[in-house]
Length: 194
Image (cartoon, rainbow, N blue to C red; front, side, top):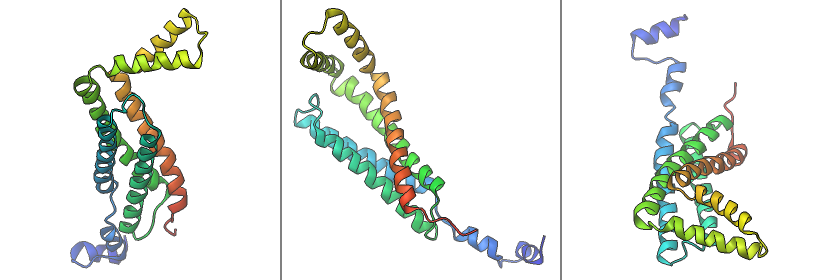
């Protein structure tokens, strides 16, 4: 142990190592919670707009585009804020942590909304989506046999259960968050000099 460390233990004068650690205020949690919450609220507002417009079962392309842009925007902003709080340094590992944490928070909140939506707000959601899937299957392959139709509908029914929708929502949020975090992190990274 060198004299500076001993001196800093017995006085209020921090050594250089301690002052560096104290000046570092960047926190993944501090960045992820508000950004994840705002991302989830943005996606929920978009979903409510689609529902009010009566387009829930059509799943318009612009809904997915807006959701993707919101995900990119909040992950980018979270990384930028973290980098600013971290003396302009951001490693790829930190970028991935931030993006995945934001995606996880948004995914969990979105999963709760999805569960409430398909259970209470639109209790016929599963039945209606299965009918949309059936019509789409017939449109895509009009010569489909009854056996093929039954098999396809069986798979669709399993995918449309509230538990599966919630699970897939969280998994897809994390997957997209990982891809966006990886690309954004590679662009924004600025490793601390050794």
